[in-house]
Image (cartoon, rainbow, N blue to C red; front, side, top):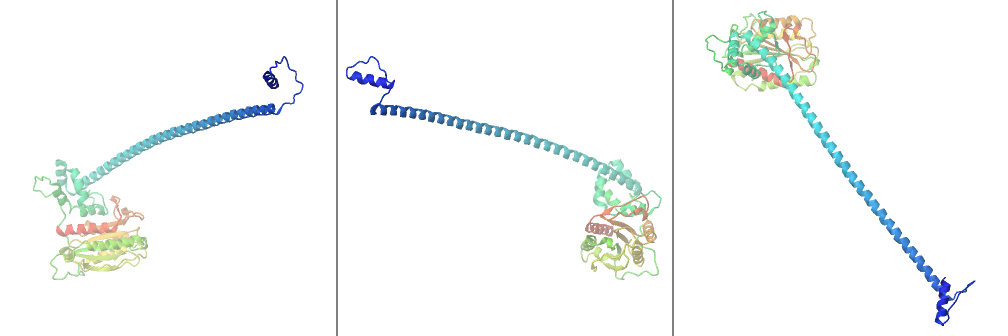
Length: 407
């Protein structure tokens, strides 16, 4: 076709009209061959250009598809993050609500427990005051001041001593110990409550006011220049191996704190006479009676077994060697149940003296060790309390001694 076109064009240039052409073999001139090659090249270039356009188009489509996928992923991630955040927020809010509900339940339980405990304490206080002073009980009951009485009792009455039972007239040593502990504080309690007594009858029916022990031929007298009656205080301390380590260190610290409670050269520091007796296998008096101004602590050491009877007997002997003194104070601090065989008789001697209003006798157990069955020491009605911290104990003892001295 191309050759025919070319030939007809050349014939026309020479004024010849072709009527037909039959070509079996053509030796194309150079020009025609070059023309053919150009056409082939153009066709190839066009084809390549078209292919390039198609490739670029596909590439653009791929890029666009990639961007679309990335955008979809970003949107998906954002939705996931938003959903996770919402779930976390909901979970947090739910946890906070549960914590608040749990805390509120704990508060309610605690409030109920405190209410129950307060009622128990109030009932106990009512029973004690009724036993010690029916007149005071009637006044508080009439004027409806039991809540104030309970508050003042927490402030003014010693809470760390071993006490228990009621004054039911049975004469058991536990009941008498309760009387000895609280009867001296009821007047102050009535004063704090500002009761309208409306009667000249005394609130308290105290036992005999004489606080001295009966004469003893072997007693030693106080110095002649003693203007004040002395207040003998005996500490019977368990220094057995049960008190090793922190307990004996705390006990030494407590006795040191006890001395610091008394202002040097004051009347009370010169009137309180302290003696210390150890209650172990080597039970002995390690400190004879000396006033607080002259008292110097020799650190106690833990050794041997707990010998309660020996310690109490030594303490009672020290007390009996005194005369013309105020009612003595005997504190027995014990870590484990006693191991000696005759301690019950010694304890009974002390309780009998307390029962006769000749002695203030207290037993204190150490927290963190086996609780002592105080019913073996006193009676089945005795309720034991344990101590956690000797400095607090001795500060309380000092405060009670000061109150006793002022009275």
